[in-house]
Length: 619
Picture 1: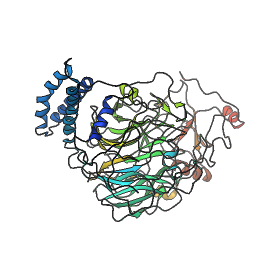
Picture 2: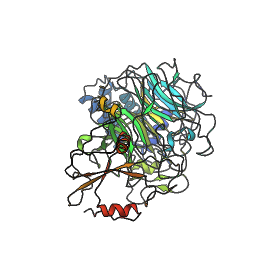
Picture 3: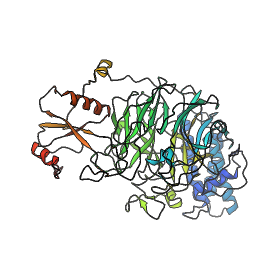
């Protein structure tokens, strides 16, 4: 059983006698400041004067931003200005006693923390969060959310006075048995919250031991009362979000099928929808591979991460897509042809902004890495749309290696990005940010390294912080046994619009639809300079067997099953299909997947005989 009061430190911290106050004199805070700044660290230590100079620059940036936005800092701004020059002089002096330099460093941190917590965006803001042993038994993007891989321990907790007290209030301590919790969402009126829970008392011995363990969705009032179970079936359900029309969108394995490229069983999970009372849960995406982290954007669209690797590399393409709230009008938002970062997860809308905050993470590890801003107005691929909010943490697996826990690593062998922080804390990482603005956010952070497949991560690696784009990071909470994740304010918020469906109700009854192809020549990579005379409409089939290449259905590794739907000749405005083709086309188009090829009929016959066909050379 957990204590009512949770004091902290991760595996990298050395715990000691700590008080519940989070005031500026708490030794826990000083321990964290020392680790951030590299004071007497084993790797890449930093001197007090060097640390003070960095802190002064960050404080200046913080104060300038407050001034530009008209935020009232009271006497703190004057206090910072009056002491800044004195502190700069002491840091630059070559004969300041060591004890005075240490006191100078400590006093700079104390005032900087007071300034950060005086931000109007965080004043009087209770924070609700999840405690969990992250990543499950097997650290991977797929397995991290299965009940069969979960480790016990955790719950839903509230920090009533973040930044002032380390005391947190449990909401589920007596209402649910031992188990694992994940994800969290607060209703827009601030009165209810929804989360995922899986009952278990012991960690699994392997990924196959407990297939019956699954995450179910629960809802309760924001004070922890009136707990009710929303799902009760054999499917994993998690990552729930309240929609503006009161329905709930979430991720679920109820679509059926398995992943393609490794040893299973790894059930595919995709977008699903239910009514506000939990009734009529159903998949709204039949995408062939996994999807993650739905969230409602300010314009009402749902943003989420989709794994899209048909006919290409399996590792690099878990990027951002959007969909209407009913599952129609699926579109790429960012990164579907981007290899760095490997993938983008945990996307969230920023209040008053068209930009998106998210986590740049790895494929062969649980979701953790570096926090970024994505600006779709600056492009749909590449680095131009990205702004690094935590440049101290390079993108895992594409810019820095991820340890596999057994002596090897996933990621680049050369051209790695090295920062002072990665030298000091190799593999340190961020995750589950909640944007308060484009520059200020709640976030979970770990000094312990991110560990990837086939191992698992330290259970208590993540603490909860208030961070900003200037490099400031103030500890709000840490636990001795578990990580603190998925934090968000416990308050009301603006309700986005309801997105209208693009499905015609009469067409839905008749199993009919209208589909448009704008311009096949506007493709990436560019098509060869030839005239396209024929299009092939193909269906990618869900995988019904649990392991890769069992049976093998194509020449490349882990090829998906495909079938020809129809040939569309150039110049045809309307294509007549047989009744069987119509049934298959409707099912397929529900899958939100449309693939086109331009093949010669003779090549099609050779393909059917299993012969290898060389594709066109792309310049």
